[in-house]
Image (tube, rainbow over all chains, first blue to last red; front, side):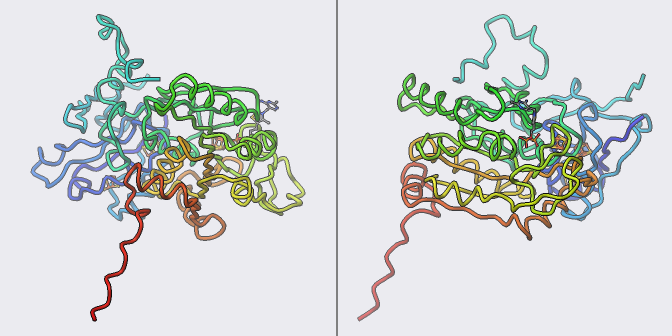
Length: 108
Length: 296
Ligand SMILES: Cc1ncc(C[n+]2csc(CCOP(=O)(O)OP(=O)(O)O)c2C)c(N)n1
Ligand code: SF4
Ligand code: SF4
Ligand code: SF4
């Protein structure tokens, strides 16, 4: 088992900082969904992690804790995530932004 | 080397992998994407085997987003960690023998100018400190003295990372490494000073913990290299493996190194300033308006 980053939508969607998307070393890994928060009645969208690309470095945790000061990201064992986004289920939208269909992660 | 080469041949799109379709339909080609849009479009850099949390990886990711015209860009690299990622992007990558990157890029950029004339085709070298300041040193310096028009970016992790921790000319004096157990005996080489001496039109030092600055530095360097002359960027891209930096402290390290020996610096020749202002509308280099005449 291994750790991946997990973003708390409720905390993230209270701001619109998007900082972690610029600091993850891996491309196409922390993505932004402009509607994630709004669907839950929150103010903004939220960042989320394509867990199949995450290498578990926890740099995003440092960025969210120390630069953004929002404490929205934790490292979680991948089989403990109830649902997660993976590349195959992510749609890039024509107007910019993305949408993920989070689903239970199957770990062999 | 054009917008067309990424497009699907008619009828083939449904057989392409999702990542490829996303890249064609929602990637940066032919658009002006910026670091502030990161996370909202498909990046051209794909998965690669560089270590988790490597600052060099982050820098390469930012560089790929910052190229002014990714569809008209070729990267040139050499042995070392960086090529493991640079080669996994949807732009052509040329890989020669260890250290010959600036010689290869010289021929390549001249050939592209012969073939395409004034249509800009950008050549960008990205290589490690060992490949650039040690093994490829003469080819790097000679390309600058010859005023070859392409961009050279040093991925300076201050060590030979890919081969397990030998010292390079860019390692700091006294630094102990796995394969330099007695500590390095001489000072870090002043490649910035040498780039200026050799006539580079743009020279900058940068760390990856300021994405917008990385973007600005790379855009300027690539644009200036189109017409004015050689450009050089030296980026601090720590090796968390050889320097034993916990991955969640990599950005903290970059921040402290920036306040110490890797402060941001930027040299732009007068000719390059004028070119950026007149050709690309860089306001910061526009001539200052003459001060209003004092009232009589
Ligand atoms: C002619 C030649 N000599 C030696 C090597 C072995 N080699 C591969 S990568 C490397 C070191 C790379 O160090 P650096 O250029 O600093 O890049 P880094 O891996 O640190 O990014 C060496 C010596 C080689 N590939 N070719
Ligand atoms: S840094 Fe934190 S608050 Fe900001 S976008 Fe990322 S997860 Fe959300
Ligand atoms: S843990 Fe590392 S690789 Fe994973 S999302 Fe965070 S910064 Fe990116
Ligand atoms: S060995 Fe060092 S420079 Fe190379 S990928 Fe790993 S952390 Fe990065």
